[in-house]
Image 1: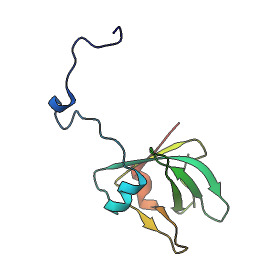
Image 2: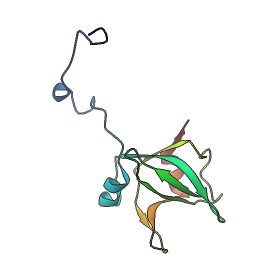
Image 3: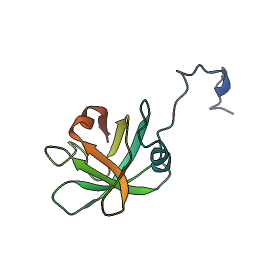
Image 4: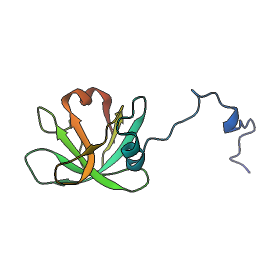
Length: 116
């Protein structure tokens, strides 16, 4: 077909550094607990009321969990509804109320980027 590339390369033939790794899902992150060398992406859906930023965030497969900001400013700079958070070396967290998700600390902000 017209859009087909003439020089196709099998995914099996790519070097490990050339393979595009999919970001982790909530379920995978929960299994890892701490995923050094991995990335996690989540879209900000809705903010819960409270003193600190607690966002309901959806992963790439559609599962929604909480992301809580335990930072000095009690927020994640630039993170707002509709934005996507990319977190390198993420950690899963179980909250005291029995819910689960991610707890972002001040030291984690260096590993977080926000996409549009």
